[in-house]
Length: 356
Image (tube, rainbow, N blue to C red; front, top):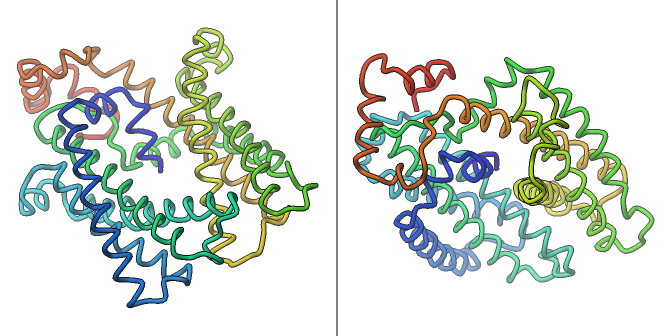
């Protein structure tokens, strides 16, 4: 789900996918696949054993794969031949495999785990949770694939993006700043292990899981915020950045993406244990492993997002949202990117090893 965080944390990406015209089109893109997913669920009930978790996840994944590809094409606003030649099979494979299959399964597990905590277990009442798991994952995949396609379309048209939400820059950052990322990941392992022990004294499995989830949400979300501030000031201390940041900004990033995605990833991990491994509850040992993994990932992701925000602040053109929506300015930006060795934008792309 790193792509989702990048689309909402990095200003260049956020601005591109939140324009009024894009939002209006996005509502339709989400609504239509949701209706189709409901029909698929009704049909799948009669064709496959939808009460089996693995079967449900397979159906959800297949629906999400098709949805991701079609929604990406709508956002891309180009023919299949143009998309294949300009984007390449590697990017399309990532959209189908990661944004579609993997992301769809994660969202389905998220829904099932959340309903389980609320005492509405898919294993006991499969129809309602199964339907929600398929529809919610499908609509969310449609939204994100459409936004990624729209970003790619703007990139091809000449609008500069220093970060494309495919995780490539994270892999490069792992190679270049292993010690910094490793430090935040190690801190996350310790914090996550401690947070996951909350609620172990509670006898009821659902209530214990809820307490563990709340502990992970607060602590791992706080870690993600600190890591984000560390990436935002790579040459200094995250504490300095913390002191310079307003309480409103701190709360915003603590809540989203910090707490929101800490809870999301923990619910996905719970879903793997409860519905794929078919365990009756979350044991303390399993909770420690889950918490350590989720918090470590949030620490690494937080630092990555902060560092990419730092790169944008240093190298991206400092233009307001109104200017970026102006066709005249967009034309100038397009000429800057298309011209050989253009000053400014092209140099920024070369420094980061990307071409949009």
